[in-house]
Every structure is written in C-alpha cells, then in structure tokens.
Length: 227
Length: 227
Image (cartoon, rainbow over all chains, first blue to last red; front, side, top):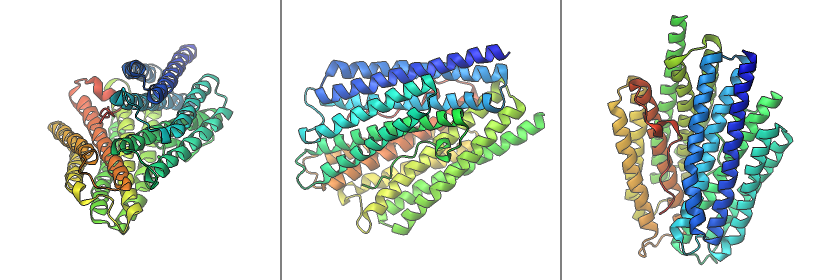
C-alpha cells in the first residue's frame, strides 16, 4: 500500500511541477507580449492556459482518487489536501498570466503600457518571473529557503504595484483613460500573481517544516485596496 | 459510523451557510459604505472579514478531520472536497467585500464613485447582494433552480462591469485619475464576486444533480481582461 501511495504522490508532485513550469512560461511570455506588443505571443499564452486548466482537472481527479483508494491520515492526508489547494492556486496564476496577455492583445498594434510606466512593468514582470521560477524550484526540491526568495519577489511586486498608483495619480500623468484603466488592472493582475506564489510557498513550507503559519491556511491576502 | 458522518457533514454544511450569510452581510454593507460614504460601516466590514477567515479555517479543519476519521469514498468524499472548495471561495468573496469597504474608507469623507457612475454601482451592488443571498439559500435548501438566478445575477454584474469601462473610456468622462482607478478596481472586485458566486452555484448543482459541468471544476473563469 505504502509503495502505491508514494508512487501516486510522486505523480501528483510531478503534476504540480509541470503546472508551475507552464505558469512560469505563461507569465514570462505574457510580459514580453505586453511590453513588446507581440500579438501572436499573446494569442499563444491565451490558448495555452487551457492546458493548465486541463492539468488542474487531471491532478484533482488523481488526488480524489488517491483519497478514495488509500484513505490517508495525518501528514499523508494533509499532503494530498495541500496538493489540491496548490493546483487551484497555480490554475489562478495561469488565469492572471492570460489576463495580462489579453490586455496586450486588446491593444495591439499599440502598446498597452505607456512609456512612462514601462520601467515599472519591466521590473514587475521580472519579479513575477522570479516568483514563478522559484515556485517551480520549491516544488521540485522542497528547499524551503526558496520560499524566502518568493516572499522577496512578492514584496518587490507590491512596491511596484504601489508605483503604478503613484504614476497614474501623479499630476504629471499624461496617459489616456484607457492607459489608466490598463495600468490599474495590469498592476492588480501582477499583484495577485505574487500573492498566489506566496500562498504556494507557505503551504509547502508548512508541509516540509510542520511550522504553521496561519496566513498559509487562508487564501493569499491581497494587499489593501486603498491606494 | 453513518450517523456520525451525517452529523459531521451537517455541521460542515451549517458552517458554509454561516460563512455565506456573513459574506452576504459584508457585500451589502460594503456597498452602502461605498455609495453613502459611511466610514464606520466600512471599518466594520473590514474588521468582520476576520470572522469569515476564522470560520474558513475551522471548517477546513473539520473537513480534514472528517476525511481522516471516516475515510469517505465516492459521493461522500466528493461532498467533503467540495465543501473545502466552497469555503475557500466564500473566503475570497469576503475578501472582495472587504476590498470594496477599503476603497470607501480610503476616500472618506469624499465618495469614491463619482455621480456619473453611481447608478452603475447601485445596480452592481444590488446584483452582488442577490448573488450572495441566493448562494446562502442554495446552500440551505439545495434547490438548484436558485443556481440559475445566481447565473443571471452574475450576468448582470458582468454587463454593469462593461458599463464601468464604457463610462471611464467615454470622451465625456470628467472623473479624476483617482476616480478612474477606483471605478476600475471596484468594477473588478464586483465582477470577481459574481464569478465566485457562480462557482459555488455550479459546485452545489453538481453535487445535487450529479450533472457535471467542466466549468465547475476549475476556478471561476473571470471575464476577459479586454475592455
């Protein structure tokens, strides 16, 4: 029984790593599509989100099947439940990458982000890419020191998100209403992406160390809506 | 064993109903705080979100405990897993109500929503209140015809969300950049709130009827980011 359980758990873990890799690729490409105005790349990110959704469904079925067949308890049970939650979180990260790509596609052949905010989004996309990359590594290695890097990346995104408000609310802002709307929503998408990365990091840290952080049990707290 | 399982399941169901009632109260009061500029009410909504978060944690522990103690299979297992997912969704709906209240508080004593967009948000808050109320009723009665009303409410929110873009992008829009940002984010919060209501409705419908809608297994699809 134990061997079967471990083998199935390994497959679930591999599924999460695969999802995370696809999310990493999606957010990186979505950022390029956004910043360089690449229509085909945007289309590609949007289309490939379906693969992430499909992987989530398969993974969830696998988890439910494992619960039914093996009736795990204690830590084993928590591992499976955590996998279910992480797959839902990765699926949302995929959605957010898709949303970034949708904004890029919607403005093509123009660029959604005006030159004055470009630097912020270049940095934001780099930080989001880092969060995604470290999430994949954390899922692969269970090296919890990576969780700290994910938190740092998320902090960077939060600061850059604040910068987007600073930019649009500055009297010197010359963006159109469309640009204000786009910068506001894009900032929100990246901010949520970072939050979800932190959620995954905390859940894995909890599983590995047993150290309980109440923040890890709830959905990722999004930053206050006040700007 | 069966009696114990049913009794515990009943408690989990009651917990979901309680969460949903709190969410319903939160979104309704957040809307009033937003539209009437009521600072204390906004504070109250923000503070009471902690109760929803706490309920989610308790409910999740109860579900995990039930899985460990009773090792349910087949439909029973799916019911518990679905309860876990619904509690996470309700927790997010609470967060979104809190975000609306945070915007209201951040602009006090001014109103966040300019007069020209007020009608849209009055209607949006009514539709969100309807979605929340029907969600509570659906959880209480399992009357799946209510799910349809939730979908209708969500469709109304989506149309009103589009109206917010129509307003801010209209050349006649005279709102400040702050108002553009607020209207954009508030529209997004309500839109997500409606999506989550639909997610709960579909999951319960699936449990009650056994009719599988693939959309119900993934996270709620949010409307395209294109505006």
